[in-house]
Image (cartoon, rainbow, N blue to C red; front, top):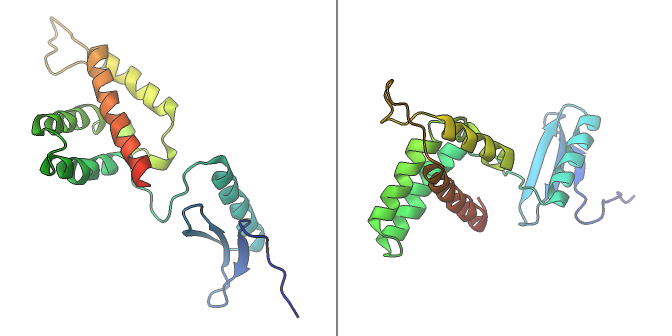
Length: 171
C-alpha cells in the first residue's frame, strides 16, 4: 500500500502520534520548514492554505517568534551598525545619529511594538503623521514647536536603512 504524497511545494498535513495534534508543514523558499499546529484536521488544512498563500504572495513567513520592530532596531544598532563602525565602513558620528533617531523617534511610538513581518506602509505613514504633530522637547507653552518634516524624514531614512538591512540579511 502506497501513501498519496502532495506535489513538491504544496506542503503537508499530518497527525502526530505522540499527542494527536494535527500539523501543517510547508517548505519555505529559503529551504527551512514552517510547521503550525491545530486540534483538528480541518483547522490544520486551513492553516496550510494560509501559509501557502503567504509564500505565494512573497510575504515573509516567520520561523518561530517574530521580533517586534523596536527589538530588531536595538539589535541592529548593537550588532550591525557597531560592526560597521569597528570595520571602518561607518563613522562613529553617523552611528550616533542613527541611535538618536531610533531612540528619539521610533522606540517611544506605537511603531516599535509592531511585529517586523506585520509592518505595513500604512503603519509607517501613520507614524510619520504622528511625529509631525508631536511637540519637541524644546517646545514651551508660550512657544509650541512640533518636529519638522526634515527631522521626520531623517528618522524615516534611518528606518528604511534598517529595514533594507533586515531584508538583505533575511531577518
